[in-house]
Image 1 (cartoon, one colour):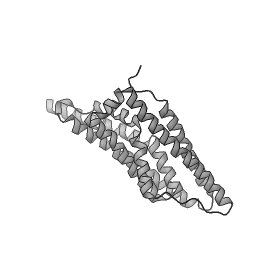
Image 2 (cartoon, helix red, strand yellow):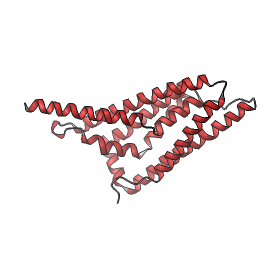
Image 3 (cartoon, one colour):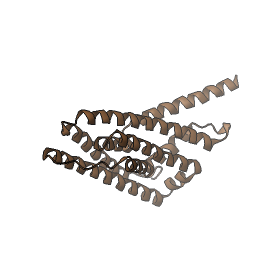
Image 4 (cartoon, helix red, strand yellow):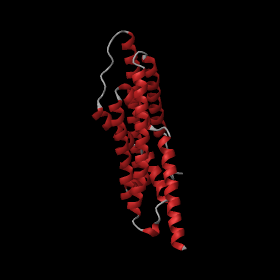
Amino acid sequence: MAPRRTGSQGGARLAAIFLAAALLAVTPGPGIFDVVARTLAGSRAEGVASSLGTGLGRLVPILAASLGVSAVVLASAKFFTALKLLGAAYLVWIGLRTLLSARRDALASLQGGAAAPPIGARRAFREGVLVEALNPKTAAFFLAFVPQFPDPAAGGVAVRFAFLGTLSVLLNTLADMVVALFAARLRGAAVARPGLVRRPREASGAAMVALGLGLALARRPGAG
């Protein structure tokens, strides 16, 4: 009977983290807004590349947490502040660039000019990586939430932690790709109506600026 209860508890843990990861995946964050902006400004290929980049970026805190690095960063006020300000500045920069390019492209379309060339899939991928890798809130989530689910009695906590964290990253990446496909359809349907693309691009840019400012004001978890 005891082994059966242990298996049931393990299944409950896995179901709980799957549900939590799914909810996290559909919650708007820097990654989703970057994917939308890249798709609307460039193409579906850029959106998918950004999705893969944000996915890789999310793996950084997973690996760091497994090795104990994230715990050190979150425990150190100086390290946490330096990382959050760097991430905040990057988000604000990308958000402002998205806002300005959306307005510039809309004005060029009205005047019969050409829109700015897309940044390309490679750069979209690189920016996606940095958007998530420089976000200390991602590390804080995994350190605060995921360790509740590995069973210390089963051993291999670091490996189980990495597995559950990677599961969450895969769900997030899948959600980002779905968003990229929908944004690509919107972009294709709005070729003759630039305003339909401009508004979501501006909204994505403004959201990234707001997230960057919020990140800059974020307090270190556990700080008094």
